[in-house]
Image (tube, rainbow, N blue to C red):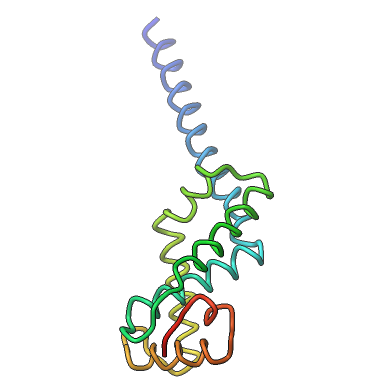
Length: 143
């Protein structure tokens, strides 16, 4: 009897472990849709870069209402893909996803010859974005 209980307990542990592993993979796989969607990927990249410029450059500010509307549009788009607001919030608050977008923003600045920590360079990029009327520039004012 003790052997049977041990086997049943071991099976139960395997099932539960497998279930949690599957749930974790399913969430990661489900988020892959968000990662791969060009509207969301590009939109969140624009927002991450604009946010960095806003935070590091005193002479440039975010257009808060415009940024809010922009983000609201991204949320509606994600909802149209079948995601709930809770899932969308979990995605954008996930530390790994935030780090991924931080790396994308770093690469963006590096492509423009600017170090991620160089406030003067970040301000220059911000002014360039504003003057060109790019999606990033439309979320900012000043410069």
